[in-house]
Image 1 (cartoon, one colour):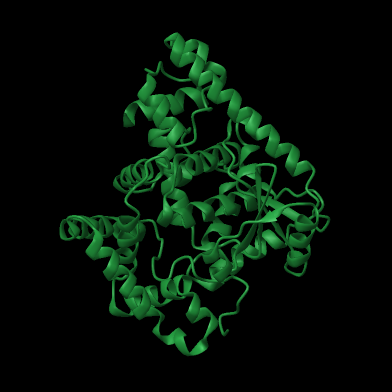
Image 2 (cartoon, one colour):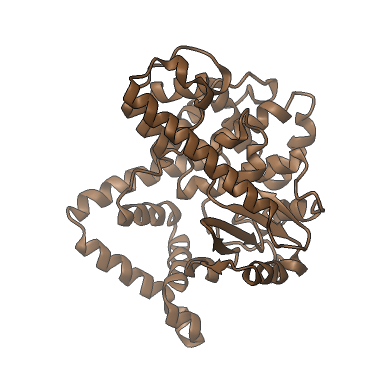
Length: 386
């Protein structure tokens, strides 16, 4: 299935090859949320009538979904300056923007306008649906109306290094204007930072294709030195090099001199990781995912304590309300893991397997220059001294 999937992506975006398509491939692309990519080329795939009808219906549904989001974006009641991030901003690089699957509309206003932007959505009939863990982190608030979700970001980058996270956010904030669209190189910095964030929670082919199409459109060898400066300041150069070379090796992107030195074994491992972890329709064992995440972060006793403490604060409401309980959040989280572990069938065998997976994941992250310690918990609004 892996080769068929890659071949279909190359055919959809670059019109190369003659892919074999069947029901299994269609369902796999749906799980990765990229089934609309071959939209205009379905007639040339010689599909069985029933599969052709189902695939065409999925493409039309995606296009209609995109149009609904586009209308909602143009009618946003937010009257303070902001910029669009991720989905809508990435769709501009697609041959057919409407074939890019949308999750929500992400926007980021200036710091001083954050509360006002949220209040404007509420006043226009949007209902707040922010999840509890996001309320604790404070990265964004979520609002929904007419099946459209809007995320308003207080900060965007979630690196563990506050200085690097702050650099990314300052690039975004310094380019907010009435046009709502970031310059290409800053938008590219956001896309690679988004890849960095999702490397833990499940990086998918959709985010990789966003990056690939940006690189194809905007990162000629002449432009690279200016972008490289931004990447180095943000700590993302190694990740960008390997993600791009991976796209060249497997997804049909034309070659660039600036990423030729990438380690081919790391590129292959990254692709396997993306295909395995980015399959959003494959509901993995949630306890297993949490266990793998803990094992990946807890490389030392200090790392383990920090991870448990942060997770405990996210899950223990009483500790957030009562200051005296906060030092014991790590114990609360450890207890949660113990209870879940006892309930799992074949717990020891699963834990052993998850330990192996976490070691392989850590090796990949280190090769990509992605630090795991405390990842996703830094707030770029805070100073290093705070």
